[in-house]
Length: 288
Ligand code: PPS
Figure (cartoon, rainbow, N blue to C red):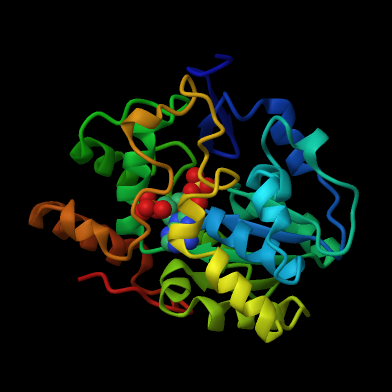
């Protein structure tokens, strides 16, 4: 398949060439947002697909038809990916757009447009585990080799999509400057409907009981795992080798405990403290 082994470098970050070209990245970097746009910004494996589904249900007022008939990448296209120029609809109330790009690339344009941003973060230990497994099935990402060597690269920020620390700090640094709602995967896990309600209030879209009920049901892990419009089974095996695992893998909090050795955990904690120690995070996750 096309460009499976190609890597693009942009804004200091390496990205899979199967999904990105310099042209698609330049398109993203010069994009004119509309004030009614809602941008989902995430580091990979932090709850992107979950948020795409939640916002789809929110804006359809609980009608599950769009979520059941349109793939997530069409409902909320990634701004920087090759297909986005064609996939992005004209500005409309609540146009959903997704990005994994660092904040500094998009912040000026978002500020000018006063567009809204939902930033989803997840415990980086679970991100590393999920990303490792994803590397095994996604043929557009490098072979991760062992978990230990992948973890080293993750902590060094040399994996594709760059450093988790830089990504989170970059977007958090925009909190006073952008109209941004920061939410964690763990909060969604703990209270999906309550968290969706808070997001709805932020977006000026309060949710009635019927919408909340449909959202809670449809955005559960089990329901999304079985929805071919969100579980990536539509992607052919040459690009995602589904025999190596599922995109909707486990969907739990704290899976890192089943993967990390005590040494890896100590190394991770040290690095986390160096990078994030001083930072005031709006919500914390258990690191021990
Ligand atoms: S990507 O490739 O960046 O778009 O991946 P992303 O969607 O950000 O993250 C995938 C992980 O999110 C989990 N997921 C969920 N967990 C709980 N509930 C729901 N509804 C849900 N939807 C997606 C998915 O299983 C991946 O996490 P892991 O830990 O690998 O299971």
